[in-house]
Length: 387
Image 1: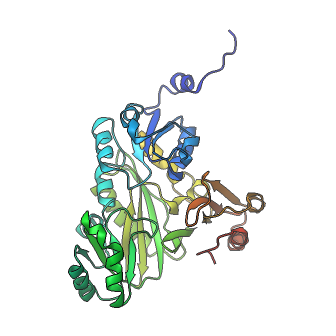
Image 2 (image 1 turned 135 degrees about the vertical axis):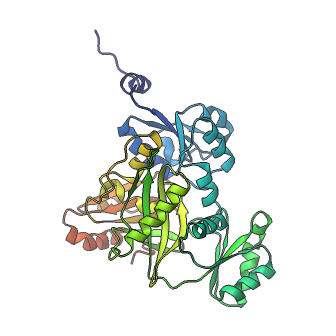
Image 3 (image 1 turned 90 degrees about the vertical axis):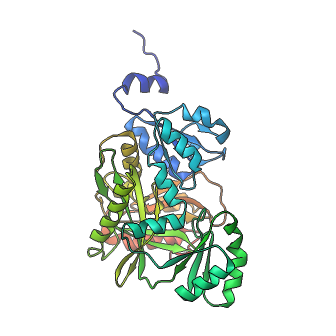
């Protein structure tokens, strides 16, 4: 019999017939979708995407449907997931009620509104900063009196990477903050959050299977600049006394939401323990280190959970540091010339304030981690938040 080339479609149908899921549809086509698709390929799973940006990063690894092609997208896959919490809730509910969406649409509903999120934290007895809903200028003045200054005024919907926020430090800022954010009250109230003194920012990522099994990644420490994540250290140093509280908090959320997939909980470290900031119902920037730094990455574990496959080991291979490339690319040859440096480009055009790539530093000699990170930072055009 002659050797006949096997098409990708035939490869899946012939050799992967025992897979419960062959194609996963992803709502969104950004770099998270790209990395999810990369992790799915070795599992014998392909991905397609719902995304209106034709040059999105995920186009490199699968077909991209526009929102005008939603019906076609909805028929193309065995199950669905998402890569961005601002995914339209209506689309998510349609998919959940037909083929299946993981995580559930209710988790999206909670994460899309900061008031819903904070109220759920309170319901589950997860510590938060004091907060108040703000729908009018008078209510903002009342919130400033009750919570005290400084405080942070935020939109309840749509903000990410520091967008939709204003720090009110004095009475002179109140009117300015309202002028900048008050228009958002036409569709949803704002939220005023009391300021807290925190030592550092950490996050915990966990994954829950369809059978209810939960596995936790270690706490990591995050450094932000202007609301954008600049650096993640994995594992976070000196958090042995905080790990149990962090795991208990995210476990409450996963079980209450009947969640399937990867969930991220961002936290502040204070003298009195952990304060919850927000959740992300998806794989997260603070987990990018796990591609090389964990036995099974957050991306692979998310796809395993969505596909109904057994979860992978979340243990760290060795300590690592993830650096975001923001705005401008470095010389990739210079970066890769360093030992233990892993580069991930997103095929995005350079733009101020835009995440366009990340680097994970994980040298063979862990004692040289700090030294290697300093060398990498020295090669980056944009060092904001890294020095």
